[in-house]
Amino acid sequence: MAKKTKSSTPPRNPAVPAFLKELLQARSPSGYEDEARDVVRKRMQRVADSFEVDALGSCHATLGQRGSPTLMLAGHIDELGLIIKHVSEKGYLYFDAIGGHDLSMISGRRVDILTRKGVIRGVTGKRAIHLMTPEERRKVPQMHQMWIDIGAKNKKEALARVTIGDAAVYDHGFEKLNGPLVVSRAFDDKSGAYTVNEALLRLAKGGKPSCKVVAVSTSQEEIGTRGAITSAHLANPDVALAVDVSHATDHPDADHRKYGAFTLGGGPILTRGPNIHPAVFDRLMDCAKKEGIPVQIEADPRPTGTDARSIQISRDGVPTGLLGIPLRYMHTPSEVIDLNDLEAVVQLMVAFARSLRKGESFV
Image (tube, rainbow, N blue to C red; front, side, top):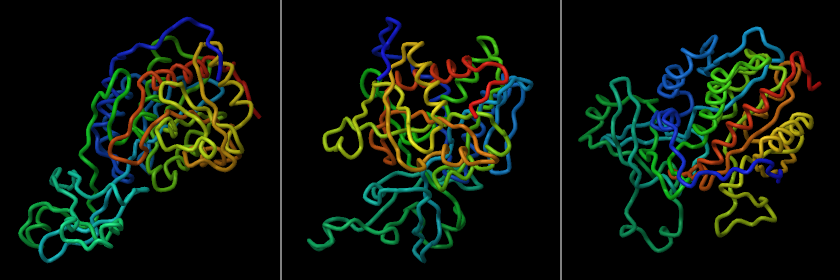
């Protein structure tokens, strides 16, 4: 852990950024990121030197068009979802998963279905426990054994309201939990998307750095880091920082021998391993020490499950770093983060951008 050099105590009850709340309220399953895109556009278009959306729906906000080197900051705006694939004669909707769901979490949830006519409310259902055999009660239902109930009387009525291919997300919004801890669906990775855009906003307000900064809100990360592939090609960065959530292992049944020891409130999690350029990691550590930002270090021996995996190998290769926001209960409807960790990630990216000398290369 980097030693603090500044005497600052994180606030016990930090303010909740309005930008973050707007992103969390946006419903944006992979491939259906329109609502989150609108939030980013509203916040960034008037501040950035340029703003564009690529063919896969990723947002590019650029500061310092003639700056050098080009620094790409990436956080994804998509989230887990469901996609309607069949409507029964009785009007029940059957679905498949968008992204990596824990099947035991799906039943009994209220969901918002995104249709061309607007949002439709539904409930995920399955057979009640009273109607199961003892053996069935011990099993997690498979996807085809669950459905969405929208209160339709039959197939015709259901299809008048929804269309095959419509997507849905859980209706679990933002709440404060205790002190700096907050809970919501889709902190993975609306929190990361917030940080990269907020970093650019602060750089614009506090005097532009010598580098060119491209804050990218990537699409379709949850189904294979797809948006990062096209975004990195378009941004053509000299160096990049990806931001995603990372597992906090400070809950009761985490085996630190397998997963390492990471805590909420412990600061950003910086990854080391083949996916990370050593010089970029070292610079992040130097910036953290200088700014008095505590960090946690995670080792990963293979390509990470983040946008960093695609950015690193784009074009001729990009020196890449990865900042993790500690998070409990990943890929559940109630993910938990510490707002002070979120702020620390923003501060570290701002410091990294300001540390870059004109024309500097990590190659």
